[in-house]
Amino acid sequence: MENRKWVQTYVFIWSGQFISMLTSYAVQFAIIIWLSLEHRSAEVLAFAGISGMLPQAIIGTFAGVFIDRWNRKKVLIVSDIFLALCALVISFLLQNDTINLNWIYLMLGLRSIGNAFHSPAMQTVAPLLVPKKELIRVAGINQMLQSVSGIVGPAVGTLAITYMPISTVLYLDIIGAIIAIVSLVFVHIPHIKTEAKLSICYVIKDLKDGLNNVLTNKGLTLLFLYAIMVTFFIMPTAIMFPLLTTEYYNGGKWEMSVIEIAWSVGMLLGGTALGFFRIKTKKITLVNTMHVLLGTSFLLCGLIPSTWFIGYAVLTILGGIALSIFSASFTTIIQLEVVSNMLGRVFSIYYSLAVLPSVIGLLFTGALAEEIGISNSFLLSGSITILIGIVSFLSPVLMKIGKSK
Image (cartoon, rainbow, N blue to C red):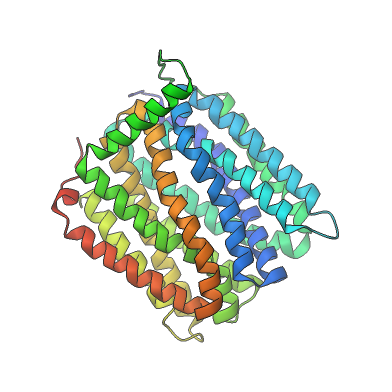
């Protein structure tokens, strides 16, 4: 839907989302530092990762059906309120001298449910406001804003956890959510109405429609398959970055912060390239190339000597660039290939199909990392991801997808 005022509307929405992302990154990184330094366990990080992903993967399968029918603006506002309440409860829990990690895992799981509605809803807003020819540039700018949050957030989180208790740091997340809600209240987001009533039968039918929308497009099916495979091998290992920094590269709080910032600098560079330059390369070519680049960065992070911390930081920037360009290109392909009233369930189905296997992988990655070492886990996942990228280039049906319509 084209709208002469779409720029102002989208900027207003993202101004609030930017501040919310900034505070969320800060709090998220502060929690990672706290868990890493308090417990120094790959399994603790693995369980925290599972808690943050599994509910979103399960609920997310059905969330898309409701997102496609409900008012997107209301979904985003209610989700932000719920996430703020979760942060408030976690803050109270962390004020106790004796902290039961199971309660923390539970609250991370509830936050995951809120994200199951918030993330796909945000992905579906752009096609309702932005002209199709501008989607790839907007996706790149979105990646850039996320990257800036990822650069500043860890620094803020590190400063906060250094001078404040973790329970107080969580109030940053609540402030950010409130600002995001206010920015949504004053904008209009088009709502695509549907006459069909919600029931179990309709939900199942809508899920089938969303899945069939992917399966009937062979190129889109392969795109999903390869992206899911990459997520399966990369995501569980990526959660171990803090331990790779502390255990293999002998770093501490600030070294963890440097690596997190380096990753976000890479994301910023990738988003900036897409947002400010008209890239003529086919989007599917960008997706496959970024698979190879991402795998290479992970492989070398686990391969170079532990004394080469600067090299490790540079490789992390490379990985951030790869993920940024991949995410923007992948999202744009789906936005162009799938009709607007299907986008919510398609994005939700993809996330669930990608994350559920990754959760299973995460269960083994924690134990595997303890057994073979963190660096070898990176080497293994990187090698497999490079192979997937090469196979993607050799799939003719896949290479025909993603051309602008």
